[in-house]
Length: 76
Image (tube, rainbow, N blue to C red):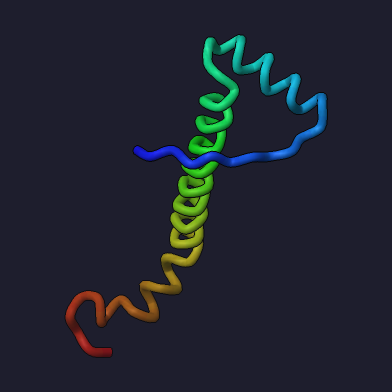
């Protein structure tokens, strides 16, 4: 995959923390930040799916009453 350079500005404490965490994990700061962003993006997707599933569970009876007959191939 082609890489794109991204420059960000953070305060000294954040930069220090990023360097320390990357070092603890045996990786570059670049790789550490890249993994954090990928993880965050994946979690957002999972959070959305979980919220949608929860919504469907909460309103399952409403949907069944409204659309159940059509879903089974029958007309109301």
